[in-house]
Length: 74
Image 1 (cartoon, rainbow, N blue to C red):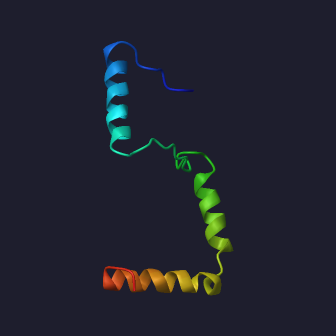
Image 2 (cartoon, rainbow, N blue to C red; image 1 turned 120 degrees about the horizontal axis):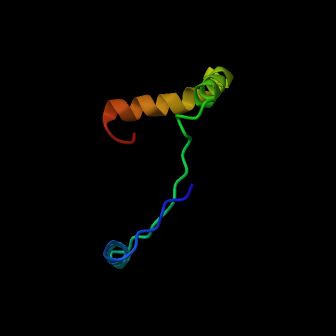
């Protein structure tokens, strides 16, 4: 279900707000993320974790450890 568009004064305020943001060099984006409330979400995550190969992930995990320890990129 799509959200209902605001009408009247609130619609005008939202338009003005968005225009101010655009004038600051910003633009709206839409981001789609997994629905963690979906019935199959947890099982899907479990399957993905089971398929991970520690050897393939070691470089990324080492990088994360270094960054976490130093507080910035190495």
